[in-house]
Image (cartoon, rainbow, N blue to C red; front, side, top):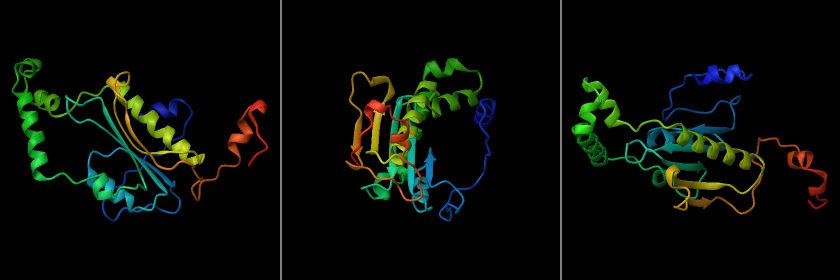
Length: 203
């Protein structure tokens, strides 16, 4: 679906299906930046060892109670990967399943569908809302462009899309002065496109 959307707008796409596991590695001809959206922290940890210059990962809330939550992390990171993306234990999985069962048994969900399959899907997963995906993807692309341009970037952002006007997002800045990563060619992009009145002779 995403490929068709892009093709209609003039982009050339080439979907590649590759399993991500502990042996997954970036090949020499692949991009140096990785934009990821896994639903499993084990996969996130594996990608950190895959040879990418920078990984931009974003995850959304997986339950009806946190559907608007956005968690962005970049790698390399000051926090070790096993602390940044801890592996869930059996207790956490059991707690999530218990919450899903409680929702499935509520009268509101019982009235939604005659078949059990519909109730399971609705209770077990958050409802997809386009604006949450739009906010998160804009954040990821912005951080990628800032990194490519050598600007200050963020290591972590946590926010709720429904509360942007009242709750301050939690962020952590990666570095105060950026640098262009090795292998990313940016030939004086800012100087070439800046209006003449804003150009400077300083380095």
